[in-house]
Image (cartoon, rainbow, N blue to C red; front, side):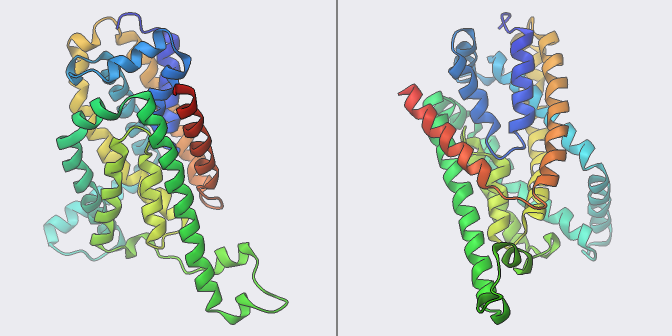
Length: 313
């Protein structure tokens, strides 16, 4: 892939840095955008769907961008990770879980196990079968449905909770939507049990399908367990970090072989671009989800996915 240009490297790097954290599927966009543009960009998608991941330059390039994204998450949540790693070692030494941080550490461990096992076993199969524009468009549409359904189910739970409070549900002072959201019961992140963390982590495995968002699907899982958007987003970002980093580091050595021939400069530029964009994205989203929802992203996925299916048909 000596014809990978610096423009392509910067574009795909920015795309990865943004869409890995926005709930719109980075893998789906890394397949769809080159297919939308066509020409030499379309060739990138063909490379991605090749049989041997060790010999696929585009896959190796995208993997390097994943490492940049994971490092951006580590930097942004550095205080949390220092506390979590320290708490994990403390529990291994004392064999007890006493604090909320120690509990969070084990929630992350439990949540990482399902996607770790599934990713190792099925990543190759899912990539070769589904990393195609038509499939990515269909799954991006499904992703929009999942995000929208998750918001509706969460909203329904809030309305039922409000109905149980007479001062919110009836009369001239009946609650507005903002009142309902503010007064609805919300769980703290460290009150999740380990089974719930495992289920949310299992949701991540769907992100092996190009078009399904890792952050989006795990946020929906958190919302359905009673977390608010802010905590659901934080858990999603923390849960994704070790998975993205481990997967990237596992495949990164392929860049030292034939897959990386003639593109080291492009990889470096794309890596820096992805890291900067990912850091900006997580800052933006951490603020966004303090007051806003997944609905705009659901609408985007529905429109972009359905439009892409029509386009490629």
